[in-house]
Length: 237
Image (cartoon, rainbow, N blue to C red; front, side, top):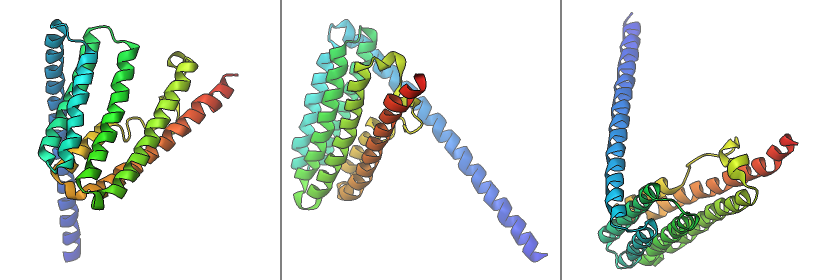
């Protein structure tokens, strides 16, 4: 009898904990969504003001890129907080140029410039962490750059073939069962960089995890390319 009572009590306690955890998760999700909506509205408001001043999205893109590159200098000096400020400003400008483009007419060159400078910025920040502590960070930074380059090249190569085949109308990378969506892309990288600026001593661990995720991303893009450019085309015939 005593054992049964203990078992019932433990089950009840376990269910209560799970319920509280679910409630906390729901509250956090609602809070995150509300915060994202507020941030989106703020960026859209700023974009309208900047657009009215006649500032183009490309100018904002280049400005944010230049500010972001300053992070390399601050990282090399070990000033992680100023580096973090530059990184956050870069990411804000990256969101702002997209919002401006939505209000104006987006251009192919604008899309190219935004994507190209984003890749250079992220690679530059990784290089900055290597300069901050070459003895501890150089090998991990090299691995992360290798993995980051693999993912970037896979994405860009896919985009080239998709453009060549006019896949914007016929095919979509997300139609592949192997594609993992936004896995290991801009948001995850930004979070990793913020964490590293706050706790730079964990660069090795974070670089390894982010590098592995980037390599997985590269493999999923390759699998998606094979499916969409080979298997899907066979099925269409």
